[in-house]
Image (cartoon, rainbow, N blue to C red; front, side):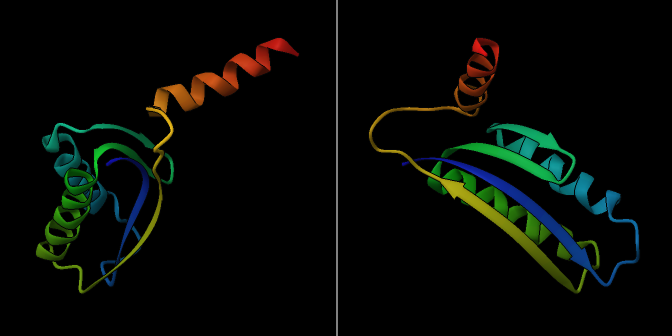
Length: 101
């Protein structure tokens, strides 16, 4: 099953700045080879269900290995069975409608 997620991994107990931990998670996402797009409050990732969820697990593993005793993760996900749709398709659809008005 194809899946699109919005992932936000937040380490707790590591101080105020978490950019080092976020960078480590981003490296795991990039290494997965899955299509992804980082944004200000997380990352969109798309691909097969098991592959996407495996990279979420890897993010947790690497952030814990860096000394984060706790992690809170927000995960939104969507699937479709009626047709294939990518992250780009979803954004392009809205952009096209905005140009019509």
